[in-house]
Image 1 (spheres, rainbow, N blue to C red):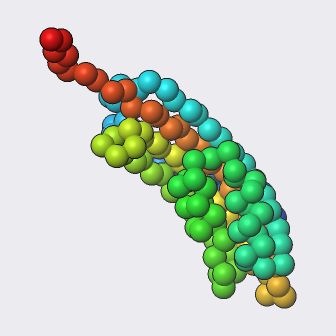
Image 2 (cartoon, rainbow, N blue to C red):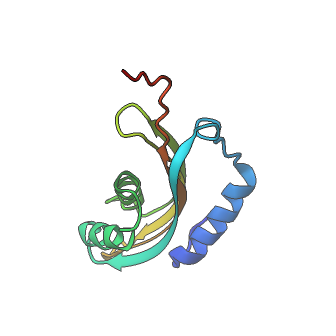
Length: 142
């Protein structure tokens, strides 16, 4: 049970338990050849009177993350009408044909809303973004 008036303590307990139980599968990206990589980590705790206020503040706090990851974490962490939630997500995306990149992240969040108004949420995210190497298989000169 993660019920707590402090989302930081609740997130800490939740992350510890989840990391012990979860096996992370990186098989989709471990054999990719890449030109560049960008590891990232972010932690943020925000509070506000409305869900929109908290979403905006959380988005600003997570501005160093890839936009898809930031948007996903904000949407999942701040849920209007739910009194308390702890959750996590691991996602790996390989987008070689369109954008020549891949990313994988692991995110955790804990959010609380008060019956009298107000929201608090804490998130923790770690991931890596890879720029996939372009391989030229045959060059013909004339």
